[in-house]
Image 1 (cartoon, rainbow, N blue to C red):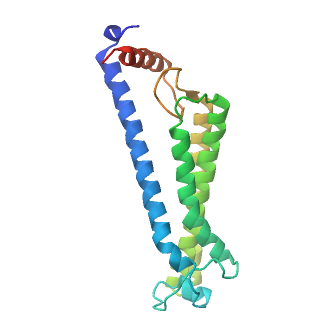
Image 2 (cartoon, rainbow, N blue to C red):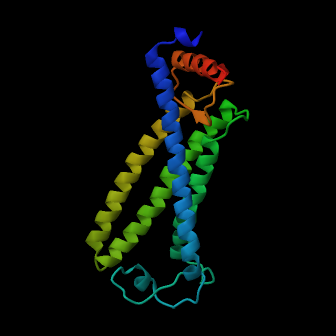
Image 3 (cartoon, rainbow, N blue to C red):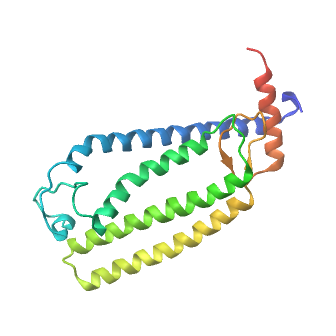
Length: 215
């Protein structure tokens, strides 16, 4: 199929898809840079001398006493939750960025299928659940540790978790069943799902023709 035989709609959709892919890459790079910058400038406070305080003082958003987080402090559930929320996000975005930008390397469909499952379950599900638990602890402390407030917050988080888990499992299953990789020669990086076979083949032909045109 030559470039002249491709419809304008196909060419426009192909270019639009590549532009969206590039925009996503820019957003990922910006997120990684911002998170790493924030970690670097806040690291001195995390490793400085610890002002010993109770968990209530850490969680109470109205507490005026300066609290410094420290790696040397005794390992507690709160500390593990904080460190996970602090450092897991950048690591997760980095691995997503790497997979989304693999170009010129052979990628097997089986790898992409497993990666889609891991991305959804270890990303959206795991990370948001930890953040929700921290949010419950902070709000519970802010409202004076009232039992009714705690029960209400736990109920909301459970409902949100069930709905998110269901939607994520459906999405992961759909991605697993429709996983495909870019045809050889197509300058699209990473793994894909929900393919339109006719569109993919046409886009491959169009882009191959565009690439082969001398400047």
